[in-house]
Length: 386
Ligand code: BJ8
Image (cartoon, rainbow, N blue to C red; front, side, top):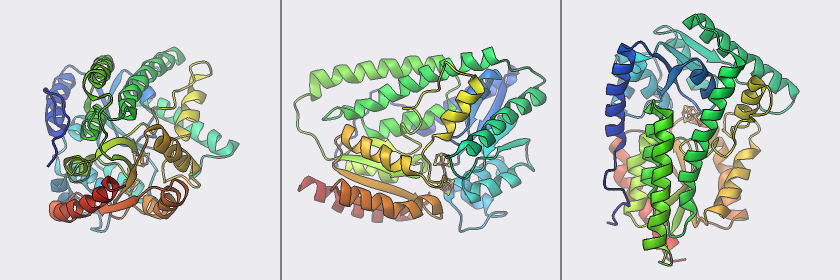
């Protein structure tokens, strides 16, 4: 088995979560505002402008699935079940410490789950338009962005000024740039950065409450990796380079991302919400801040939007920019929107880009770990032979 390329002081995702939990407890005791969030469509700038901390509540653990099945059907996406399971069982400290929840109508399962969540805690559900095109979609979504601001103002008894929002946009744009620069280390060939580290760092960011600290860490790590590339990697042969697409991979990081790298390939890019999906697209700092926020988040390329051509465009660009040799699509069980898009993705990758494609249908259970390893092993052998 090949070794993962990880830094000496590498903090695993469970370690980062544990550290974040302790920090969050302290912050809560100091009276800080905490808002639980789920999705890339969430305008984090408004949370920051409310002087609140945003924490990610997406469930990533198999043990949280069973408590959810008391109210939710078995045949539902594991991410939805684990998110609700953590909340209803009291096992998710981030839900416990959140003052309120900022949710969104993305897929059907999530939006119906939020109705249950609303019985546990104040839950503001942003209504996303089903498609992003046309003036009406933007007008509708802009009204929803204003509604979030108003709910924060009422809930916390504060006023959120335009200046506060502008300041938050600038900060979050700097954060975006730092995350994107870190991701783009994956463009180097051979890459000095493990995809497992990328997925871990990005998922841990959901629990990082110190945005300035996060920017500093990412800038330093990016500089370190560039130096490492120049000193040790440049000119060496590359392992097969894989792009991950599809559903978020945090809950299946070990059985997919880690296994790919242990089997002899590099995960160099992510075209999913654990990747640069929205990082490449900063918020316009020159126009009315609410309009800028609404326009930006409506451009997120998620399969819940119909149609969603931006995802294929993003895949096209990433395959070229990251010199990809093969694409692995991760489909969480019962995620209909990504599963339906999968045939177009496969067609695009194999027919247009002339690259091997493989879909991994999975959930959070460890039961298919070995079976996935066998399939990934065969896929990587195919790439190595090309
Ligand atoms: S912007 S990818 S974070 S919705 S929960 S859609 S896996 S069935 S997470 Fe997502 Fe926002 Fe889109 Fe990104 Fe499918 Fe499961 Fe639904 Fe999911």
